[in-house]
Length: 121
Picture 1: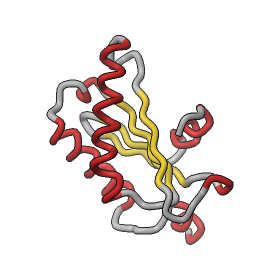
Picture 2 (picture 1 turned 120 degrees about the horizontal axis):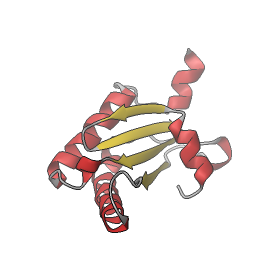
Picture 3 (picture 1 turned 90 degrees about the vertical axis):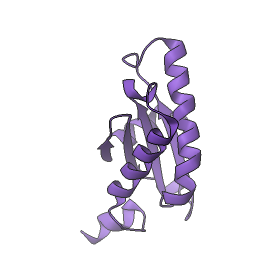
């Protein structure tokens, strides 16, 4: 995900906060939706630190996403990982664990895109 509109749309979806990151999830828009496609984006505000710290936090989140999302993400959804101050100081294993727990709780056992669960309710 690269456009601001995608990040703004994800901010209006489901959100789970852990000590080291915030996960925002929303359905992929129809024109870009592919059945099993998983898109993700990473962002860090100035609260995390200067440019060097923000870039480091984003690199760590991307690495965690590459480790977790292929195994746990549900196709047809967009995931945004927002860095927190603890993103810089937590061990990588703790960061991966936080992300895996956030993905697991946001989907709560449902293996369908969020779009499908919204249509049923």
